[in-house]
Length: 538
Image (cartoon, rainbow, N blue to C red; front, side, top):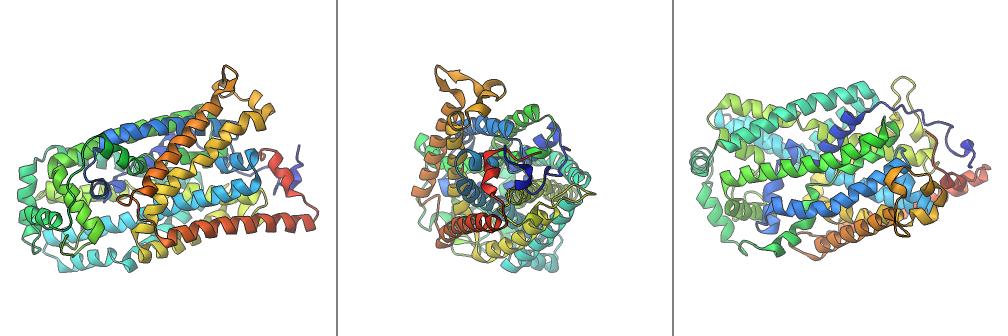
C-alpha cells in the first residue's frame, strides 16, 4: 500500500455532512431549475425545427439510465472527492485521469455555471424590461438593456461568483441554508409557472402579447414576429422520428448534471443509499419537469410560433430583420404576458424565478471546486489547494481558485458569446462520459481485488462477463454516438475555433502539470506515482 505521506496528508480533513435528501436536492438542481427555462425552449425548438421534446427526452433517457448505473458503480467503489477523476486515474493512467477530468470539469463549469449566469442576465434584463413596460418606466427598461449587454452580463457574473464563493467557504450550514431556501422558493415558482401557463389559452396570450409588446415595439405583434421569422430562410418544421434522433444531443442537455454529485462523494453520509436515490430520482424528476413545462408552454404560444421565432432569435439575434424585438423570446417574458395584468402575480413569479434558481448555479460552482482539491491531494497541483479550514471544514483555497476561474470565464462568455459554450455543452459534455465508462469496462480486469470486494450488483457477472463491463461498454457507445450526432449536424452545433483551442490547451496544460509535478516531487524524494496505486484516504 502507498504510504500516506505520498498524499498531502493522512486524512482529507473533510467531514461527511450531507445526507440522502441533500444529495438529491443537489442532483436535481443540476438537472432542472426555473432559470434553465429562460431561453431553453426557443433554443431547443429553433435549433431542432420543432422536434417533440417530451419524446426526445424519453429516448435520451436510455443512455442516461446506463450512465447512472455507471456513476453508481464508480462512486460506490471509490467514494472520494473528484470521484470520477480518482476512478479514471487509477484504472487507466494518472495523466489520462488528470487530462480527462480537467477538460470535463472545465466544460461542465463553463457550460452549466458560466452559461447559467448568462441566463440570469437574460432573465434579469427581461424582467426589468417588462416591468418598465408595465409601469411606463424608461429607467427600468434601460437597466434591463444594460444587463443584457456583455458588460452587464460580466458584472453580474462577478457578483454571483463572489457571493457563491463566500457561501462555499463558510461551510455546510451556509451551503444547506442556501440549498433548502432556494429549493423551497423553486417549488413555489414551479407551481406558479405551471398555474399561469395552465390557466392561459393561446387566444388570450396572443391578445395580451399584442396589447403589451405589439404596442411598444414596431413589428412586435405575435403575427408580425412569426411573419418576420418565416420570411428569412425558414426551412419549415421538422417531423417524425428522424427529428427526434437529430434532437437527441440537445435533449440530453436537459438531463445532464445529476451525476455531478459524485465529485463530493467524500462528504456524503450513507453513500450506498444516497447516491442511487439521487442519481435516478433526479433523472425521473427532470424528465417530468421538462415535459410538463414544455407541454404547457407550447399550449400557450404554439409549437410553430416558438420554433420559428426561436430560430430567428438564435440565428440572427435581437433587433434584426428576422427578430425585431430587443428582448429574447424568453420564459420570463412569456410568463409575464400570460399573467398580465395581474402585477402582484408577475412580481412574485419573478422573485420566485430568480431566488429559486440560486441553488442550481451554486451547485455547479460548489461541486466544481472539489476537483481542485482532489488534484492537489494527489500532489498534481500545489498542496495549498488541498488546505481545509479547521473551523468550516472547507477547501478554501480551491474555492478561491474557482472564484478566479469563474470571473475569468464570465468575461470570455460575455464577450465571445453563446456559441463556444454551446459547442462545449453539446459535444464535450456528452463525449466526456466515454472515458469513465471505458474505465468501468476495464475495472474488473485491472483492479481484480477491488472488483471482488465490491458490494452488491457491482461484482455480478453475466456468464463469465462482469456486468459492469457490459454497462460501461453500452454507456460509452451511446454517448459517443450522441456526441457524433451533435458534432456532425450544423443545425445543432456550431463549432468555434475558440472551443477547440481551449480543449487542446487544457490537455497540453494537464500533461505539462502532470510531468512537472512528478519531476518536482521526485527531486524532493517523493514518488507520487505511488499515490495512483491506491484510493486516497478519507
